[in-house]
Structures are given as C-alpha cells and as structure tokens.
Amino acid sequence: MSTYKRTNTDHILNEISWKYPNVDEILTKFWLNQLIEQGIIPSPKVKTIGHMLRGKVCIVTGASEGIGEAIAKTLAIDGGAIVVLASRQLQKLQGITEYLCESGCSKSDVLALKCDVTDRNNVEDVVKTVLSHYGKIDVLVNCAGLMYYTLMKNLKVEEWSKQIDVNCHGTTNITGAVLPTMIEQKRGHILNITSDAGKRGFAGLAVYSGTKFYIEGFMQALRQEVLEYGIKITNIQPGDVSTKLASRSTDEEARSKYDFSNAGHSILDPDDVAKTVLHALAQPHHVAINEVLIEPQAAPI
Ligand SMILES: NC(=O)C1=CN([C@@H]2O[C@H](COP(=O)(O)OP(=O)(O)OC[C@H]3O[C@@H](n4cnc5c(N)ncnc54)[C@H](OP(=O)(O)O)[C@@H]3O)[C@@H](O)[C@H]2O)C=CC1
Ligand SMILES: CC(=O)[C@H](N)C(=O)O
Image (cartoon, rainbow, N blue to C red; front, side, top):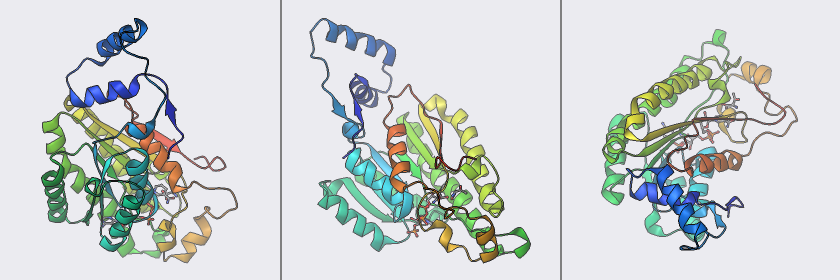
C-alpha cells in the first residue's frame, strides 16, 4: 500500500466535488474548516491516498506490461479505483486481473478488455462495454505506445508507421471515444504517458520524438477546448524507465549509438511513474497537474 498520506481535508473535498460537480470548492472548504474549528465535526484523521479514487472508473491502455501494468495496479490497489485494463494481449490482462483480485480488489472492480487502440471500431466497442458495466468513465490513462530506435538514414519505414499508428492515431482514437461521455458528465480526466522526448527531440528517436510532440500539442489544445466541461488533461513526461520498450528496436546501429538507458546510472522504475500518476489523479477538482517531467536524477534533458 502507498505510504503517501494526507492530513488535511482534501480527500473530503475531493469526494464532495465528484458527487456534486457544481459545488463551489473554496466555499465548501471554508465551511468545512469552520465546522472542524468549532468542533461540530471531528478533524479528519490521517488518511492514506488509498481512498482517493474509490468508485472512479479508470481505463488504462497498454495495461498488459511495463508502465501501464504498474499504473493499473497502483490505481486499483493504492487508489481503490475501478480499473479497466485495455490492450491487445488479453491473456496478460487476465493474469493481472487475477493478481489484483488476490491482492484484495473486488472482482467487479476490474475489467480486462482486448483493445487495439489503432482500430477505431474496437476502441468504440471498448468504451461502450465500459459504459454498460459501470455507466461512466472518470479517467482515461493513455499509456499504449511503441518506441523504436532508428536512424532515419536506415529507412525503417514499417517502424515509423507503427509508432505513428499507435502513439498518434491510437491516442487520438480512444481520446475521441471517451470525450462525449466526459463532456456529458461535465467531469473527467485524461492522463497521457508522453515522454521527455515530447519536450526535446532525441537523436535515434526522430519519429518517436515526433509522435510524442504530437501528443503534447494535441493535448495542450484539447485542454483549452474541454476546460469548460470540467475535464482535466495531464501529461506525464518520463525519461528512461526500466521496461521492454527499447528492446523491440531492430536498428542496432541506432540503439548502440543512442540508447543510454544502460549507461550505468539508475533509471526510473515503472512504479515511480505510477505513483506520480496516482498523485496527479488524486488532486481535488480545482487543482490541475497539467504536466510532470519525471526523469532519472542522472539524466535530465
Ligand atoms: N520505458 C520508457 O523509458 C518510457 C516509456 N514511455 C511511454 O510509456 C508508454 C508505455 O511504455 P512501456 O511500458 O515502457 O512499454 P512496454 O513495451 O512495456 O508496454 C507497451 C504497452 O503498450 C501496449 N500497446 C502497444 N501497441 C498497442 C495497441 N495497438 N493497442 C493497445 N495497446 C498497445 C502494449 O500492450 P499489448 O501488447 O498487450 O497491446 C503494452 O502494454 C509508451 O507510451 C511509452 O512511449 C515514456 C517515457 C519513457
Ligand atoms: C527517450 C526517452 O527518454 C524515454 N526513454 C522514452 O522511452 O520515451
């Protein structure tokens, strides 16, 4: 369980604002503090962040491994959220479901759905299934992604396309699919695992960096479009994280020249990113963590 603790009234406010979206949070906070000061209601006890996402329906794409798997587990176990695991490898998702149930999550609070984000019909079916199960979507975590180290001169055209398909089209497809629901709800949170390569182009990762710049630009614009509906957009921008992502590259020249993740310094663990995600999602409604650049201490951009 998370060791992160809060000692103030934020968790109460958070629950009130999710139940009553039109409530004025500053006024509510004022009255809450008045009632506590006058001893009319007891001061809230130290409460773990574990209660912060209770009842919230969170779809996590790319949940079958790596960072997405860590996020799904953290949101379910530490956050107490209802988690929808979405990616192509259904068997792996079912294994994670079993793990979550063995860890104390209720069976009805975990749903594994086969989802290829590049397939718009599939993505729309996933959203329909989630709505038929739970009737709402509070959070979408866009984590599905591909990265291939390639030198442009080596013309790995298939790897260019796959990255653009999953990272750009995929993110756009599922974001578009959940938006009507979030707009109707007048509430929602879309959180993207972009990259520090969405802030600075990396040699050997020209196409990948381009796809992450796309997500950054797309989401910056979308944030402006949807703020009137109470929807938040967060971009988490990790540096090197210990997963199998880079190992899928076939361009050895590019990888040996530019992949510094094995250079000897400590890199991030998927759980480091997952904790940051939980922190961003657990904020009260008036607080928007719009972006977080999280990198290994030894390797800033
Ligand atoms: N590792 C790192 O250093 C960093 C990673 N990131 C980003 O984090 C995200 C996750 O990467 P990471 O966990 O490292 O990589 P992994 O290779 O471990 O996981 C990638 C995930 O993406 C899913 N995925 C791939 N294609 C699709 C698709 N078409 N539809 C649905 N899901 C898909 C895979 O699921 P399945 O095969 O089941 O479909 C898998 O769960 C990516 O967006 C990546 O760019 C950002 C910064 C640093
Ligand atoms: C290029 C990076 O820093 C990062 N490892 C990523 O996979 O996005």
